[in-house]
Amino acid sequence: MTTPTFDFDTVIDRRAIPDEKWARYAGRDVIPMWVADMDFATPQVILDALHARIDQRVFGYAGAWPSLVEAVVDAIARDHGWRIAPDWLVWLPGVVTGFNVACAIAGEAGDGVLTATPVYPPFLHAPANTGRTLQAVALVEDGARWAWDWDAVDATLDARTRMWLLCNPHNPVGRVFTPAELDTIAERAERHDLIVCSDDIHCGLVLDGAHTPIAARSEAIARRSITLMAPSKTWNIAPLYASFAIIPDAALRKRYQRAMRGLIPHPNVLGLVATEAAYRHGEPWRHALLDYLRGNREHVVDAIAALPGLRTTRPEATYLAWIDCRDAGLDDPATFFEAHGVGLSDGRAFGAPPGFVRLNFGCPRGTLEEGLRRMGAALTAR
Ligand SMILES: Cc1ncc(COP(=O)(O)O)c(C=O)c1O
Image 1: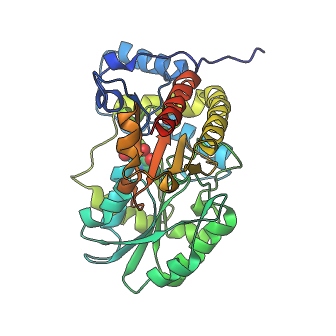
Image 2 (image 1 turned 60 degrees about the vertical axis):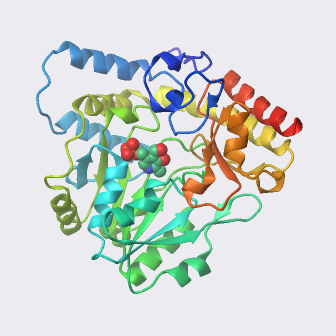
């Protein structure tokens, strides 16, 4: 059997395709390396499934069908060693939707939702969207990686805390939390009687080690967990809008579904088609992607280490690098690099102090090298 080869090097001109990532810099010579959206073509197995569905010519309302559910259940067992029951699945149009619904059932108005910063910005807004209070705890960098400050966690958890909103693997710091870290979270959840809502959207993008869903650690933590997953980040199909929550406890699942009623639409039917194709047939492409991203990661880590005043840790997952520019003497690094042709995400939106940026390295190697070259030239030319 021959191993299929995949092309991640060819640059697709996205300027002709309406989208957020490239439209932000329309008409300007700025390489967009911000929003978590890769510049690679969606794998052919997914495109083929979408074409076949379109060729059927009729789009009826559709919930998840049996072979789709089977593909998801099998993939979670295959990839994460977690055997879920089909009826634990609750289908959603998006993961952000999913954790906003979770906040809505976490205690009552005013109750607390704990999350670790820096974090994907919608985590910071979800508690207030549903009348809850954000309880943010800063992760700490120990020189090599970002980790939990358990004393700060314990000082933040209080009688009003009702939910732990976890991001695992973590955007933007790229951590894949270890079983020991997850067990510590589970122990605190038990002690404070919390729901744990874990956004595992990046779980297919683990570069080192393996992803463990917190709910897979024990039956006790499974009973208080809402795990959110989607094929969207891994196979770059986020705008097809299909994701799911896994809620093992029947009572918690019912509360969650009740909170969705009348507000949350079904996923897009083409997203569901893509989901089945991704989990059934997308593994060879995903493995090739991970190899390519590991190569890109090394370029980023080496290039950033060589730039004066910039530091980063090695992301264990995702295609995102979190860069500390505080020693570079820049007032506003995102604006500075944008003025020199590289569009990064400003770390302040992630609840970080000034001086951080996030770089998306999910792009052809040549694009990445040019972006890193521009960053270096910008710093040298000051
Ligand atoms: C941690 C995390 N959760 C959720 C999302 C977006 O999910 P969705 O588009 O399904 O709402 C992203 C997108 O970057 C993300 O990084």
